Length: 136
Image 1 (cartoon, one colour):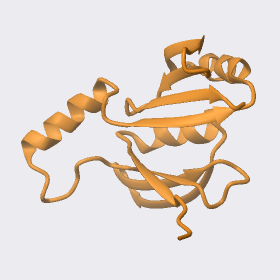
Image 2 (image 1 turned 120 degrees about the vertical axis):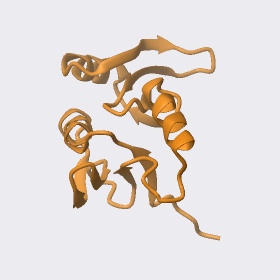
Image 3 (image 1 turned 90 degrees about the vertical axis):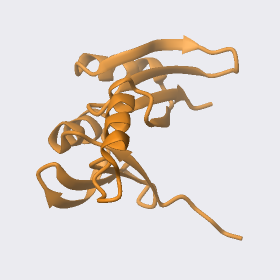
């Protein structure tokens, strides 16, 4: 069996803020921009990895989502508990410094973890926790 990950979906609450975070701060490429206003889907991915994508999409917009579910999703996003993205880099400290200088919300400064990685974490504009570990 030959299965690959093509795309994972993460919420956005402001497509322009998300575009600025993922493109301008993290350096991802914008691959597709569909829709308008808050009903806008952005497909993005790391340069040089055309088959690896994240889709930033408005959360809880389907007609089958109840008001209670929307409220729960909004609360979880605000608390950084709705989604998480794990990335890796060759230089976690340098990457942290660059992202921190952009004004992104820091969740965790670079830390050596007990399970053998050094990582840091930020929140994207929608509250998604973006953890970045040192490749190694």
